[in-house]
Length: 213
Ligand SMILES: [Ca+2]
Ligand SMILES: [Ca+2]
Image (spheres, helix red, strand yellow):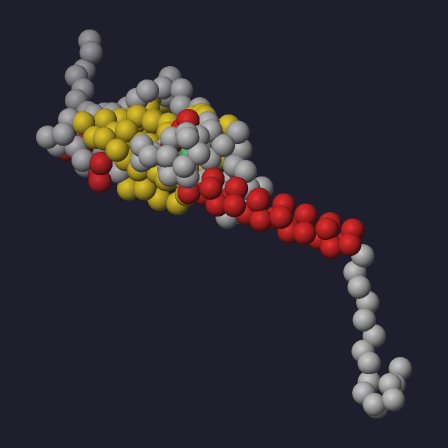
């Protein structure tokens, strides 16, 4: 529409009051959720302080620091593992991580936290390898030391979830003497005895014989 002055008038549409009110409510709700998430993120679960000022400190702040059970199928403590062998430990997280896929909400840290006897065993003796993380599991590969001086060393491997939920697994380096199993029947071909043996190490056999009468 043109006025007599020649100035174009822009059509003006007013939003209904109800729509404006609903829009503000949505923004308000989103803002509250953002503030709430920020408050949860602010709580450090192990520092002894109420970081997000909600009156609850560390693990008492159950919403920011939920109870997590770290469960392991570790049947023997300590678990004997041969020198130089690669092994793995798996822990199950109950409940599962809040995220359905990586990146995970909860951190998963693995470490060797103790070695005994301290005179000849150190946590660094164990070499930690690849780690695999899933929503309900964390798994870590490691190598046992391969030195006779570390025989019978006891190591404690710890899985730490979200900075505070832990599980400890103990392993012991063993160095069993090689065992030789002879077949039930040695075979004599009329001039020579034939023996077969199974062993995990290079085989050297010393034989002494005496004639029987
Ligand atoms: Ca805290
Ligand atoms: Ca708090």
